[in-house]
Image (cartoon, rainbow, N blue to C red; front, side, top):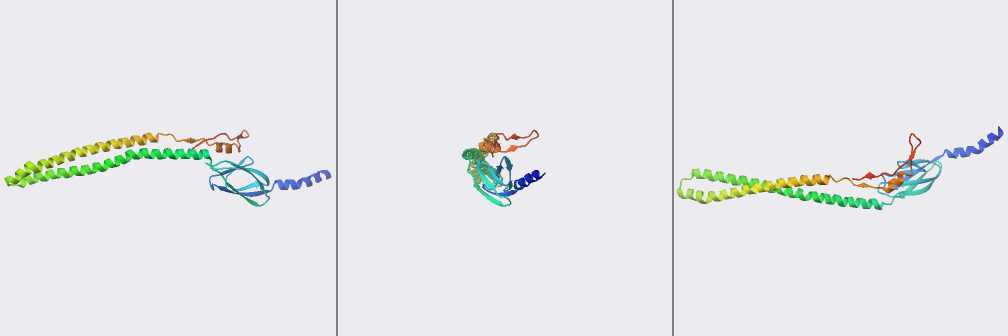
Length: 235
């Protein structure tokens, strides 16, 4: 009995120290959307309560490289871990290419759209001109009915009205042409928008995320498994 008591007294400080914890405040760049794995356990948030002693910490954020470091957690106290996660060069190249494709998509869409808007303005102007020419002919007919002097009637009938009829014909043809161009522009715009919308979203093969996920033990009903390679779509 005395030997067991002596052994218990010797182990008591070890048991007490094993139950002690400390706090680690994560000051990470970027300041959001990052995650940490400490000794195989994944954590979210900025303030971590960890067992005391030496701990292996891995940090990652989307578009950044995984950073591994080792910290010593003191008992009952808080320490700061300041880390700037370097940018993932592969992700940066992917993002630049996606941005280039997006600008190209906008340019391809803008050409028929701008042309269609211009054609619509042309059509509205042509319709206004057609209405004015038609109103002028109606005014000529009313004037013809009011005139009684032969000379005035002859000038109106042989010179004025033919000129206004020619203006009306030109205005009508211009309205038809503008309307046809507008219809073609609308069709081309709809086609281009539908064609560019069919492009599938690019998927970034994030090797850094796969590595980070592989550091954490994922519990399951059969005991658990190591995280596997994952990719995620962007934009």
